[in-house]
Image (cartoon, rainbow, N blue to C red; front, side, top):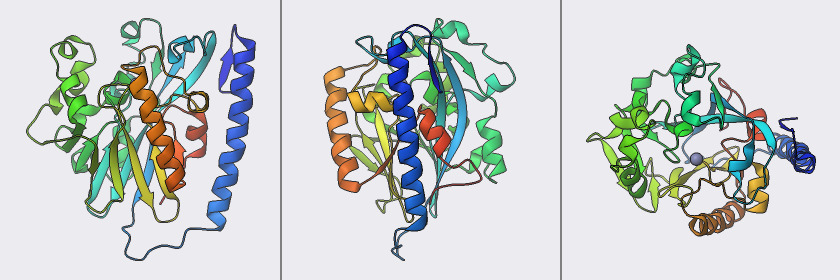
Length: 301
Ligand SMILES: [Zn+2]
């Protein structure tokens, strides 16, 4: 069981049942899609989506991931996932996970997290890219769902890429206050000339196949990623709009959210889009998604 309760047995039972249910649903969906691949439009670009292991957070009490005690006393393991999207016109890395340096120095930053979580990086992002034949300097485009520590750990590695950021998130990241935070050193090199700022939506390759959609509230410019794949259909990557499946089902916002009403409006927008596109939704920190998504060198296309 991915989440184990020390205190709140009913909460963990709910989560356990939910995880088992969603695992079953996900497997059913996948085998259905494997059997009935969507008939490809021959003019559509061949886009590949790789889910990269960007670390793990071990959380002794997930209370902060709710604002009304929904996860109080529930401990668990939270995967941190980054995504490489390979398009004929270039590569996009979406989110930068926990820093690769934690691989050789396990958990040096535990104090920064004030006992909220322990961080582990069993395999580096850079080595996973190399195993796919991609060097860091090959990645043409870099973007993030938002600037929390577990999404920017390796951001400086991609300072040579075209960086695509929500204008609101960029202003938040480089505010006087943010410059004083410990995480600033993880992404400070992104303040360069090759930054594309957007408000609303950003079509990364100009053909509508990969779009960054601003859905703010978790942070000022939080965004999600929409990827249209020939065989797998439309995929939506949530960032931290949701942290767990139960957060999506019950519209739970974390205690450290920037603006709860704004987040709830973004959830409405997201769910309407997911329904319209009949999209498959992957929650970045979901252990269900981590188990279900193919591991490199396998990919969704
Ligand atoms: Zn976050």
